[in-house]
Each structure stands twice: as C-alpha cells, then as structure tokens.
Image (cartoon, rainbow, N blue to C red; front, top):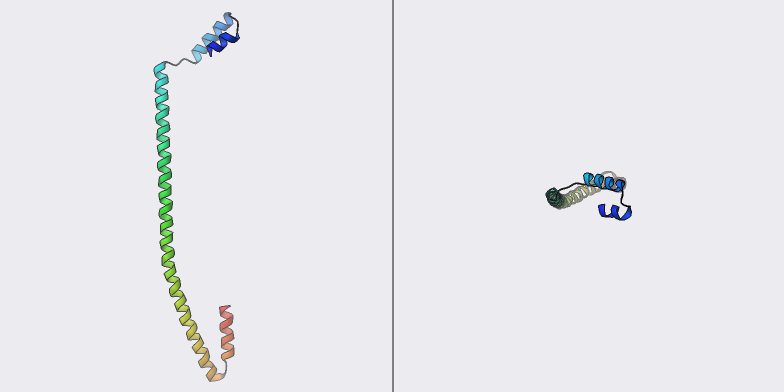
Amino acid sequence: IISKLKEGLESSAHLSDLIDIVNSKFVMPIMKMVCMIIISFCINIVFGIGFFVGDFGTDGYFTDNMRTLYDQSLSNENLNENCTNQFQKHFTDLDKTCKLLSKDNNSSSTCMKDLKNIIV
C-alpha cells in the first residue's frame, strides 16, 4: 500500500503523514500474522470435519429410517395377503347365504344386487 502511495503522490508533508497513518492502521507483527493464519486454518479444518461428520450422520439417520419403512412395508404385504384371504372367505360365505336365501324365498337376485352394490 505504501509503495502505491509513493508512486501516485509527490513527496510532501501530506504524503509522510499519510504513510504514518497507514502504518499505524495496518500494523501486524510477523508472529501475529503467522498465528492468525494457523488459527484460521484450524478453524476451517474443524468446520470442514464438522460438516462432513454432520452430513455423514444425517445420511445414516435417513438410511436407517428408510430401512425401517421398508421392513414395515414388507410386514404390511403379509397383512394385505391375510386381508385378501379373509375377504374372499367372507365373500364366499355371503354368496352361500344368498343362495340359501334364494331357495327359501326366491330373493337371491335382491341379495346378489346388494352384494354388487357393496363391492362397487
């Protein structure tokens, strides 16, 4: 910065005052500068590792939830098969009941229509 000032301005009292102001504003010893660089590097490493671990952890959590949902869906398929079997059994029982009613009082057509309305 100082070399740029010397190039752009003529030598004068104002230039020496300006150089003194710049020197007083931007004073940083070499050791302090090295320490600041090391601290900045360490902070960036800590944040980088933290974000990596956080991302890896949330991915693992998501994968575990998806595996749990998959296992639940497999158990639901078994329930659906049981439900289908039970429905077919009840439907067969209803059909037999309608046929028995038709023998008794000739109302099978009404019973079958009611069954179709329930299904549709």
